[in-house]
Length: 231
Ligand SMILES: C[S@@+](CC[C@H](N)C(=O)[O-])C[C@H]1O[C@@H](n2cnc3c(N)ncnc32)[C@H](O)[C@@H]1O
Image 1 (tube, protein in one colour):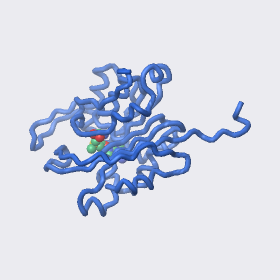
Image 2 (tube, helix red, strand yellow):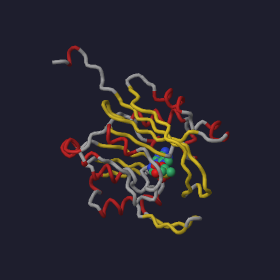
Image 3 (tube, rainbow, N blue to C red):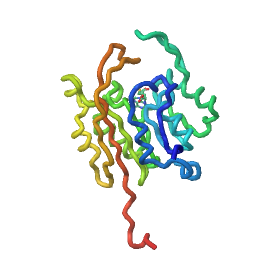
Image 4 (cartoon, protein in one colour):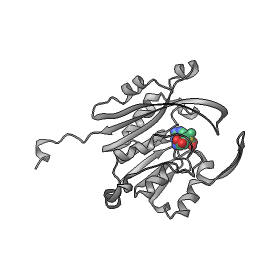
């Protein structure tokens, strides 16, 4: 069952940072089913392909939504831990011959229609970013969930507050608050896991700091069948 292993792309700038993404292999179509059915995933905040590339390699089609041109087109920057060269998503797709299966949407995902068309919608580490503060966390999560097709999966990796500023701002919810946000008619919570505290330093937050990671995996249930639609 090696075919059913899913891991982040380690060569992405964000590759070394923790993610619960590999757990998705237990829930989403993989292997021969994907190669034949070609489901589509929407990656919110796709960056340079940490999640998009492994999904594409597994046979998924991907819509990659990202507002930051640096991670789409590539570039360089210096941080306390040295010089970084980012190969943008566009070049990385071209290098692997995957460009045809990936549609890049250079737009804020909150401006996209949420019409239930994707078999998988995922986002990680983006909900608390400044531009998203124009919306409540609940609105951000519900919009992403509404992009999921019936029988599809929403994967939302988020951070739980560790200090007073994070606890009061509304974008680092306790696990129970995420339970409440994703508890909607027609949805079934598969997991809402507290994944523990990790230390890190990265673009946008160079000082060594700690994040408490968590992830919600939620299933959009099939639409109820009417007596006429059953054979
Ligand atoms: C911190 S990075 C994380 C990258 C990677 N997803 C990960 O988890 O390691 C989050 C990315 O989401 C993008 N992003 C944040 N809010 C967004 C939005 N509303 N629409 C599209 N992209 C967004 C940012 O530009 C950034 O590249």
